Length: 419
Image (cartoon, rainbow, N blue to C red; front, side, top):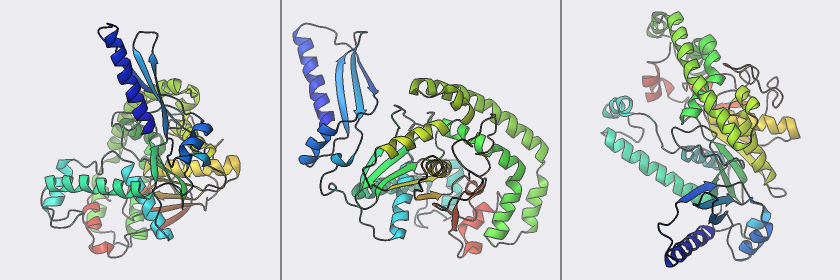
C-alpha cells in the first residue's frame, strides 16, 4: 500500500509538471507487471517500522512517448516479516482447523464462488435444495448468498494471514475467465508458514489444459470408475435405472464427437499457451508437450526459493488445482528429496496422465515418479464427485460425506448422471 501511494503521488506530480510546462495532451499511461525483486535492505527498513514490503512501483517515460508504470513484487524472506509476524495471526490449533483453512483458500482462489448457471441451479433451489438451506427460495437469493459467503470467507482468510497471487516471476495474469495460464495463491502466517494453493478449472485455458490429463481416462475408464464410486465407495445399490442409463447411450458416436470437439478446441489453446511461453521466457517446445506443467514448476520453484530458513511449505488445490498441487509435491520430492505436506480436494489424480498426456507426445516422467505412492499427499473427496475420481490419486484418500449418503441431496442429483 505504501509503494502504491508513492507511485500515485509521483504520477500526480508528473501530471502537474507536464501541465505547467504546456505539454498537452498528457501522454498515455502504460501499466504492466514486472519481474520480482530481491530487496533485503528495503525489507529490513519496512520491518523495523512494522510494515511488510509487498511491491515496488516505478514510473518513467517509455521510448514511444507514453508513461510506463511497472509494479514489481518483492521476494519475501525473513526480513520482510515484523518481529511479531504482523497483525494477522493464524488462530487454528488442530489439523482439522488447518484443513479447513486450506479449504477456504481453495474457495477464494476462484473469482466467483459457484459457476453454475441459472438453468442448472434454479430448479435445485426452487425444489428447496439450496446448499444454504430451505429458507433460500429463488435463484437470485442463492446468488446473493453465494456472494456474501465468498466475501465472508475472504475476510476470514485475510484475518488469518497474508495473501498474494503466486505468479512465479512470469508476469502471468490468469485470473480472468478468458485467460490462459496457471493461477495460484500464496498465503503466509506465523503458525503455518507458507501455503501455495492452485486454483482448479475456471478459465478457458484451464478447461483446455485439463483435456490432456483426463480425456483418455474418461473414454476408456470413466463409466467403470463411476460404477465403482457408486457401489464400492458410496455403498449404494446399482439399480435397474442406473443400468438402463448405461445401456441407453450409444458410446461410439459420443466418443467420436467428444474426441473431435475436444481436439479442435485444444489446438486453439495450444497456440495461445505457446505464445504465453514465449512472453514468459519459458521453453515453447516443453510447453507444447506438457501444457501448464512448466508454469506450475516455475511457480513452485519461486515459492520454495523464497522460503525463510526453517519456514514450512504446504501445497493445496481443488480439482485440476489439486492435481497440480500433487504434481508439484511429487516434483519437489524427486528433485530435492523433500516431502512437503500436500492437501487436495476433489483432485484429478496424476498416476496415469503424468506418464502419457493426451493430444501430445509429452509426459512428466523427468520430473515426477508416478510408479510409487506419495504419502505426503492427502486427498479429500466425496464418493459421488465425478471429477475427483478421474485418474488415480497419488497418495492417501479420505472420503467425506459418507454418512447418510443414501438419503442425501448428493445422491438425489448425482444419480441422474451416473450409469
